[in-house]
Amino acid sequence: MTTEIREFRQMLEAGRRYLAGTCSIQELNGHVSEIATAAKFWGGHPALAQIAGDWSAMVDRRWNEWGHCPNPLSEQEFLAWLEGQLSSLGQMPNNSFKPKPLRGSA
Image 1 (tube, rainbow, N blue to C red):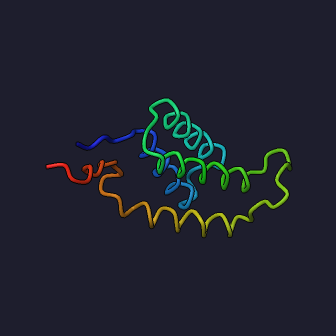
Image 2 (tube, rainbow, N blue to C red; image 1 turned 90 degrees about the vertical axis):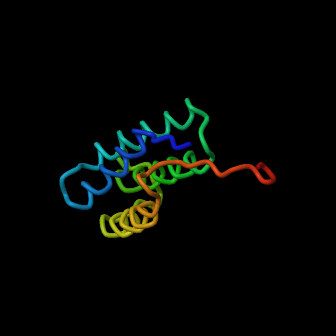
């Protein structure tokens, strides 16, 4: 069984567009917020919630809209992090979640 989460795919696409310079940090933040909400609503795999939380924290550190982050990220630091994330997450076929079978199940 494969379940594709549209918000996850859209977040990754926004990340790619951010690297290309065609997406703002504000738009990326919106997509990250949507996947965080979806992960809570669906009660999905903990890894999805972890990714959403990591992206949220890093986007917030880069945007630092109200100057509230004691250790904001520079654009170069954020771009390097985002590129690494997209490279590692790109290993997931079709950005889909495939549950592993339970141990001992036939």
